[in-house]
Image (cartoon, rainbow, N blue to C red; front, side, top):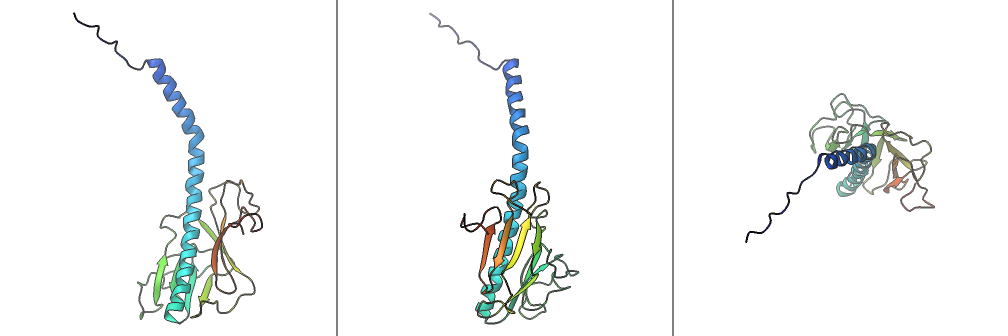
Length: 201
């Protein structure tokens, strides 16, 4: 005796259309959030890079027992100039102005240790620093000693809201890299205050 064949299973046209409609709604809701997340990740990557560059300059100064410079520059080529709004940076022993693209060397001026171009993953990140060049001594301190902590703010103009008055639930995660008068480097989130959050500024 032959058994009954199972009924064929599949998706009806109505079920398919409902599935596509649900997917479209999820995309419309999710794409703006994903875009904001991507732009905030550029802020984080840029701030991390600046923090790492500062720590490298300080570490190299201590290791070499000599002065090492960290500079923000407007471009990463040999037309570069030191700038408080530069998103590129160069760690060197001498002033790298007009020589930023020089390969790393201990003998060829400006004796570049390392450089980073903002185009490397963070083209939309914007930098605003209170000081463009920071010189670390062999003791890891800043020379000359600034009157207050040096701040380097990182933001992204493609995200609405801005960093003028950031709030805890702001869309943009405005980050700041601070160098204390003693040479210590830290990163903080401007959406919070240090009194309410250890990661705050």
